[in-house]
Length: 114
Length: 376
Image (tube, chains in turn cyan, purple):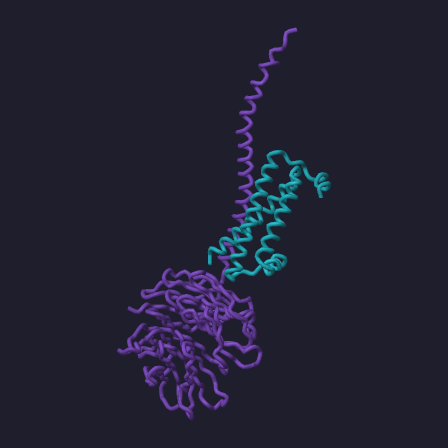
């Protein structure tokens, strides 16, 4: 993946790398927020986990679900940070963070409306 | 050769100046990067909020709630038909198609408690001051359904049981919920219950296929047909406190009649009946502690009663052509008028504390509403 990115993606400057770092930190925090809101919605009984993989882990228990969700996003964030010299990494991280922010905002408003 | 002026001791000075300037610049870069990343976050959050607002604006469950001089008038929109409802403390729970809703009678605000699948249906809810219970079926006419309970103060919904067979609306009083289920696939209907706080479950035995199931305090009552179809229905009352049972025939054997509805007012069973012997429908009250029956109302086209505490309310056609909502205290006193409904027909009544509600069906299929009033 690194070699493909090296061939096709423009290089990212120092400032871009700083933005990437902050975006990845936000992504990680949003992931925790998503986890907490999902767990709370499931506890309320109003929501159903539509992601089959997460549904499996939630059925297995809270600890496996927390471990999987935090683990997979941490690994993903570290991979993107390894690719920090390429603009593609920043675009991917920004897209992911934007989508996560949209999901978390929707969930938070939904929970507040009940 | 003399050393150049730029070398030696003079050279560190510019370097030191550069170091002092780099720290704020670096901080500035970090802040700008944080700002840019914050914009990404904000864009996503705005998108999510817009999606939520759009979804809410398209929601078909949101009712039309209008304040009246004595309470609220609640009607549905988007072609949803208002179904059964229940009163408890300061809230009204009601069902419209697949939706179960709760309206705060203080503020008039409504919230969605449950939504069955698009093709599904919800039963009429029952509520106490603390809980709402109802039945949700995934498809209309489905033989599998789920009994749900919602705790008002905590805003928490809990799945009580998956039931099979044609089940009646569950009922709740205080913290005790009861419902009918098919008894583990045996084909015989049973009444089961649970204490919603302790989780203690219990069974009241076979119900015989209850047509109505109610609970008030420790008393549970249901009406069911007897094996001999010619015999009148029987109302069974069970006291959860001591297990005592009463079997009451709502009208005499040998008479053609029908049971219009049952209610519990404290320890008094109240029912409305229509019999071939009487010219008018009757509402009777039976005190379980002092076994004695008395007729408390008699009129043509009576709307089945609702009760709470010692208050019994019912509706009957008025001389002016509309419908009169009337109440009486079982502890004594004359019947008193509560409201006059000029158009449409009153389908059912509710009573809880000092609040009374009536469900009116207008001339059109979806022209239905619930109106509440607070007694002085």
